[in-house]
Length: 206
Length: 206
DNA sequence: TAAAAATATGAATAATCCTCACATTTGCTA
DNA sequence: TAGCAAATGTGAGGATTATTCATATTTTTA
Image 1 (cartoon, chains in turn orange, green, red, cyan):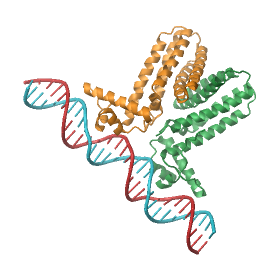
Image 2 (cartoon, helix red, strand yellow):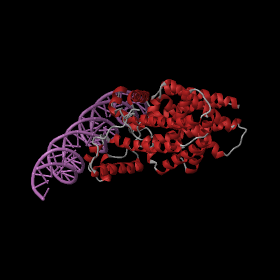
Image 3 (tube, each protein chain N blue to C red):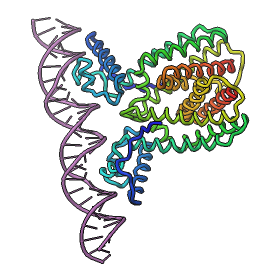
């Protein structure tokens, strides 16, 4: 798997600087939540994080890399969440239930932190974030694939199988974005519809 | 339906200026295809379109509005395409077939003009494009809803029904982005998987 | 054909990212 | 603890690029 995220300019070794990096990311999160990543100015960010502009560039080579760092942090959280949910499934019923719950958890996460959405849909001078989203979906699809393989009693074409898992995961991200962009009651309907769709898809793959 | 697209600064009335606007949009399309909307510089665009920088601002209030104009143009094309495909369906079999073909047509469109993808995933200083995507999906979902209502022999809950149509359309856009981001053979698998998913979804709604 | 309206121009302005030469703090060793 | 090296912090200023606007040119109108 390629690493699309630009490295930090300097790895913070002292406690002081680790805290600073945390402050910067936290502040970035707040500012992006408030008005999107394009609107966030480096000056603002420095002020909000209580550091100088120069300090931002001690740790991040450019503005995009700050967004990427937030995105990666979310990716890891998300992947861990999926891994945990699917690790123990042993039967078809388990899988369906686990995935159902996973969707709810994910939805709650997006509702609680709409900044996740902003990050994925905000500015990028390059295609890095798009690539990251694909990589995350691939990784997640792989987790799903493994879970299914453990309990599967149906052997279709392998590439078709992979494509279906990827589709489920990628459209899952899109569904979350959709669900939090609409009124809550409609959002819940959308989540239910997605669940139903996935349930049928999984059943058919098993 | 709200209108998120910033109005042109001046509506071109003379033939000369209408042509200019066309040139500008065409050039923007090319430049964005080549390297994304963030990389496109207003100076470059002016040169490529054979006009001065000032002329760009005669018709477009800012850079974002040029992207929005392209997006809106695509939206109209897309909506027309869907409307046409679904206008005549009278039976369940018709609908399934029509939607199947629609997905192929859409996929070909995205393959032929990856600029569409760039526009939807590229820069936005504001949330306008995100809102536009939602509006388009809603409009498209409505077209689907109408088609289904004409042939339906199943009455479930209305809001659930609307949510399912919206989900189909919104994840459809996402699926197209996914399909053109991966190798062609994988893309085709993804398109097939999406078709299968939609087919089942539609059958269940009828 | 002359005046008015529309359109075109690009140097100048403004906004914003990012650099870098220098200042301060921390960790380490004698 | 003093003193030095390494790490970290700073913000004015350089660089890039979107946007404006006073002026010039072209088209339409009467």
